[in-house]
Length: 457
Image 1 (spheres, rainbow, N blue to C red):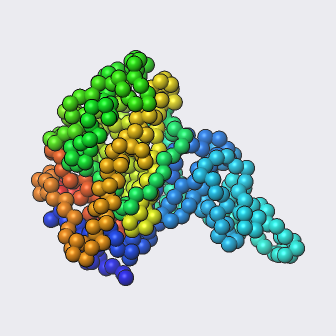
Image 2: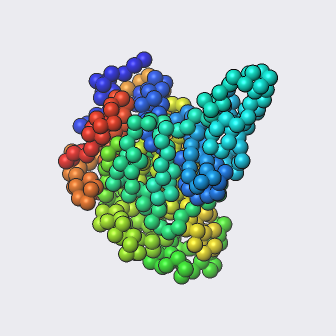
Image 3: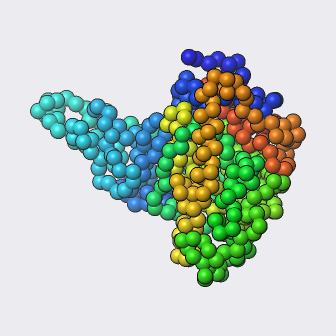
């Protein structure tokens, strides 16, 4: 089934704040997403700290394509499809590591770390030397680029440069991690599958309406620690004596943790669908495990006045979520309409004291990921919300995102477009609206124009 522009417009109403639930389970819509979003957009692949040395590689996902991101001998970075040019078998089955070459275990074709086809068994005997090896290397990803250590790739050779694609909003989202120090990824990416549509998982990262209900049990005393003793203290002076690094016991817990029903909120909207949504850093109940990075004068200058206020969650469209409470990136990787694979990358400053590093890693595992108390709560909601869209009658009900609609006056300042309000659904609605523009198959120029914020939402 094909969809024309009118049909796609009918799926998302910016004016009413309504989304057609068919977009979560319809196989034809999912296939169109693979073609018009994931085969075109810049997608996060890995961080440069994961491939620090020549031959280091990380296996990433772009839509349905498995991709090898490899540090070259000259220090550059290449990304290639993990599929043999002969019969399509994967040439690498490891998720990450270091390699001098890649070998297809089907017929033994071997490739250099630059993707060149080096060896073909029986090249002279069976092919009589007529196989042009220079034409059968690993297929390269069309474009690969690095922003502050974050490696992105796109299958579209016509896509705008990465920094232009990110725009001020996308760059700010990544800056909230990059500016915290000399950042590196903690080895071991958490990966697991939830029975939900990827858009519902993305939708949730902007949602500050649900914590007081969904996560009520998580914020009971002794379940998750707060950071009263960490606030306003430089890293080297943080006192973690008496803290149980496995349970978190020993840290003081405020009455409601981060649960809040009246957050002062700032939502930043960007071209191509990027957005940041959540409380301001001055909101009652807002916290970070280590907020001291924001006090650096250079950081304040780099973030700008709006960036310094942002305490919510950035999303690089379509699926790259940067958390702010502690530095992590989560990918929502679509596997099929009702299954999404979640990846979690945890970042630390490589100069951080070991005790603080251990604490940050412990908390990363306890909050998000397959054992995270928040992710388990959220995953149940996402799975149930997706399951109900399968019903003939249930899917006729609209997905409702009209909190604050018509009152979202957009303030344009410093190259950013923002809305200041109480808790709202502007971030979600902007993401779905932008999704619809991508699904129309617009040119890059048309897409940018269609997703440039206006004066209100």
